[in-house]
Length: 258
Ligand code: ARG
Image (cartoon, rainbow, N blue to C red):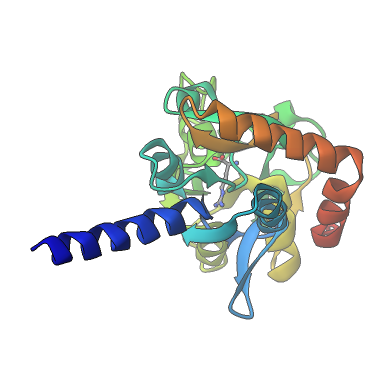
């Protein structure tokens, strides 16, 4: 019996030792250029930033890929140490997780079918909103759990009025929404700017309405009250912003509009 207990405790020590050597990152790798899988590897801006953070902390990065609407919960319940997922700072999310300093400014944008006259020659955000509200029985595709979904449906906590006359349809990711639009199941897609640029570049038959609809900031999430990790992350972010590494990473993945 003693031998068994001894053995079990050794296993326990080894196991807990291993655990603290790892930095687990929650993400939804369906959001190029921030996180996606290519050639069987995780790639993107968030992945490169997370790799630097892990190496600065002397830990092995373990990426846990999931649906976007599980990312915040995964950190909140401490199943993951951090989340990098093009995650927008928001007060509702702040109730369950803590955010680092911001590392990227973002906005929602509209993807439309090429030559959709209803959305041509728009200049301002107000023009876009007017055009969406004017369209009859419009179907808007969004990614589930994202700002785009709250923006389209309307949400008091996020401060979005929403498009009351339109129907918002949620998809697991932006690519699926764009495919549905190309199959005439949707009229438009609302998604974050950089992914919108990638999607319009990689799909023929769609175009971007290059007008920012929201004003958002991406940040890294840690579990609530994990100040030690948060301070370290903020310090690393400060360093890589100052020494140009952050900009290099963004440039590496930057996509020009088609
Ligand atoms: N910025 C948006 C949000 O925080 C969308 C993020 C989606 N990220 C992803 N990896 N799919 O809600």
